[in-house]
Image (cartoon, rainbow, N blue to C red; front, side, top):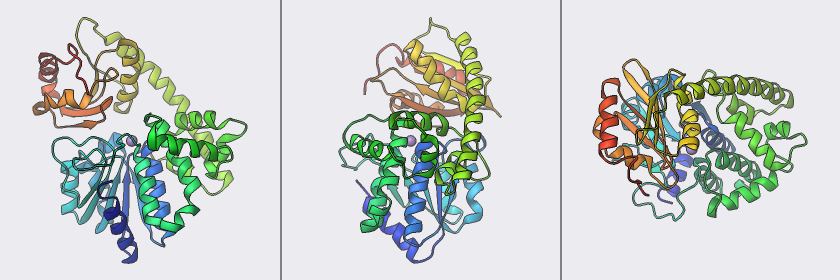
Length: 375
Ligand SMILES: [Mn+2]
């Protein structure tokens, strides 16, 4: 994998030189497990790192300029993004000028150019010849940890397999090749979990049911000061604490289910089936657009663009029918967008509110929804 050795070397060097390391990850299960594995690897080498999860509601997705403001007080430092960063051109630029050296670790598609990071670890980037491209970000960090820790990796192997398995399920990555290898071993380990949080959730569940439950409870959790309850749950070292957080997670999950139900009903009312794409504005909280879009496409099987508007900007999620490519669709109209990125089946975008109508027209006029945008 391109830059795997280089990133590993740079992290080991930072630990040796007592440099400050900031880990900035997405706040979903893939992001938090990535951050936890790298944090633990660095700790095992005798180094220290500070973890920040992306507060998407406040900062927007990824290492945005606002997110750089949140971590700015840590500069100068080595700043490592995880499960985000590959399309945060402006954020990375700002981080560079704020006293950070940036490493991007991501598994999302790069859009046109690459951010000005000192190193980029992303199997989707041009020039990466690693044959398997469909790992969760945690899968990449799993391999990186192995490279960083060398023989010491065995101490963490089981727990990291468990965490990577959770992330691979949460991100719905295909159960094949590298992923399958990890999942098999991860599920085996989850029969009697090493991770304390997972032990607390397990009770009498089978390992498969445990993963399902963990994905429900941990893929979206409450944002605290710098990190999320999901992160705290998975790093808990005392059973009482883990149990207490588990109760909070269950409560938050319930509240969220109610919000999702309402948002879904609202979206369903706004679907016009006469158009080749579903393009609609929600009045629900912005972080729900992805979940709602996933539910809408399950039902209607045509490209879905769902967005919310705040301060003159629209931010939304795209889901497309199986085998089509959401990022390729948006590339056709990228002149109207401020930012976009993601995977073929699921992506996101941001644009000026005033460009919304034009964006929709552009997509339709360039064939989106009429002809399949095949991969
Ligand atoms: Mn991910």
